[in-house]
Length: 85
Image (tube, rainbow, N blue to C red):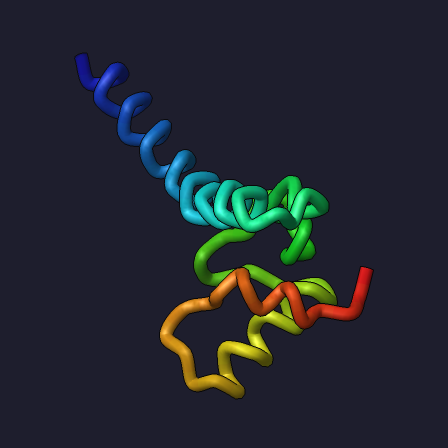
């Protein structure tokens, strides 16, 4: 019984980082950004963690826009202004 509980808890803990960014990929596709296919579209790592999530060029652009606009969240509509790859 303890093993089953530990396995279930581990599965939940490991699933949280993957779920955190998945909505961004879906939202980007709905907005027409078909080049956004995974977390690596904006992050260096395929599975970025909450406390270690290095951004690539596109991700840095979004973080700069967030700071410039003093926004609470990243808005994927800002990608319309992104001139990179």
